Length: 569
Image (tube, rainbow, N blue to C red; front, top):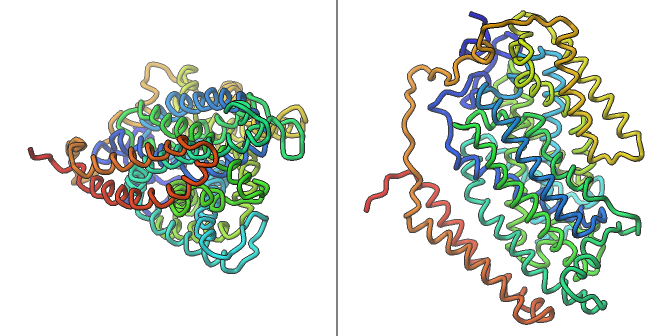
């Protein structure tokens, strides 16, 4: 039997590696697989998060119109959900491997090392940006000036960012299950706070619009929020650019296949659809509400939106709980991003203990967080890295979905014991070349470049495999030969145990849910007194939401602790 049909651990380079409880080089057995609740919580928590404050406000500055924003987000987020459910999740749940281990077996050391470095840098930048976002909330409680330039202008802010980063690293080192549980507690409150920020902002911005002769919510949003023009008066981005951005902003995770590292724990491939919780709550509702919130705060503070950080924006409307929202939002993105970055660099430095590698990556990421460019230039930096990573995701997808239809088993390079996968190397070079060409063309927006890059790579790789004479086989189960059995064998001495159902009759569950309902319903009272009354009510609401939030987190944490315990009537 070939080596890839077994389920014993093997290193990326056929060498000894340091192992950890996260099973980086072991297919995930049934005892370690998780139910859909973890993924629902993880996706909703990660994508209702700190980036939403940054991107929601950035879309206002980029000059999109209201209708283009709404329809573009609907279309783009749908494409993202289908990319997770139809492309990434099937590969993850059949192979049960991290993307880093899979790529090492597919393409060899050289390609996997380069990809892992690029992928690790991508997630380290995202994590660093979100640590900066969390630090901006603490900054708003001090006399530290807003940090919106390329480098920090305050030593106190650097110290603050280092402290926030240290706590983020501590939580990340606890592993995926704790990350998912943390997100499950935070996500419902975060989603509620984003929605509340929009509800509170609407009557205020409507009143401000009326003072400028605008009537009706639609005309106010067109005139003051999503105007269709940049602050410099230039034409804004179109519906297609918005759709492409909503689809491609998470490309490294879905079409880039890095979420194989998380979805390998999923019991069913259909759990990829749970990404919709993140896309339509986070990348639709939260982006819209964050945009209204940012524009409203900018008008009230009489400052340009580009000069405000997330802490200043949230504090103006939501007070202390706005700062808590920014902190938690930053953590719910930075922690899983740092987890992914750690996995990427563990594959590069596989001779070292995973804990030490993750700790080092966390320390480097925390240093990145001290420089505000990490979030002020986040959209452009992400776009370039996405373009560089897109070909690899397309190669993995083609390896799994297309090659068996051509009579070629996945992971054929490893089966033939070749040092490198030449078709993969040439495909990556071709894809990046197409991306560079697209960037040079003035007609192509940077946010859309990933589409031709990914599609070109998906088509070119199988063609090169055939042209370059990759061996074909028949009358075999290609996936069995490549990955092993559908259900990997259990770890020695471990027996899969049935999981207790989630207990939703716990009083703590009802108390936590009730707190969210009251927080949401109370925000609508701002609509009762008109615009001027709404501004006054916001000051009252800032204090009202404090005890409700504290009670929610206590109740939700206690429910999370007891939710798998059998219920006794």
